[in-house]
Amino acid sequence: MNKWSLIPEEEAKKNSGNYKLIGAGQPTMNQGEKLLFAVVVEFNSHQEALDGLKDPRYQDALKELRENPEETVIRNASIVEGV
Image (spheres, rainbow, N blue to C red):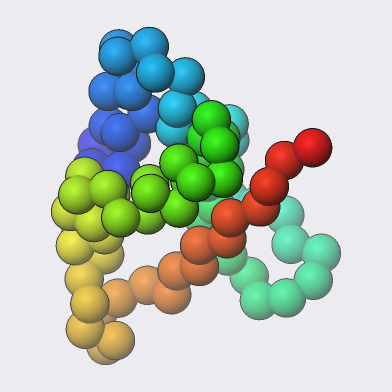
């Protein structure tokens, strides 16, 4: 199991309502470059989403993807305010 997938599980146990995994898997691409995997996560607020990027658990999980450009995957993170 990937480290990042443990974070929503931990948050669910705390009943924080934060970092809810909404979807994950291989996306169907209509535009842009093909993605191997995508994850959509819901946060309680825009600020908590920003804070989530700095969360030590998330930063630790990123280390699984490595930092060396020759060994890493291309990753994108976007934060969008909901309606």
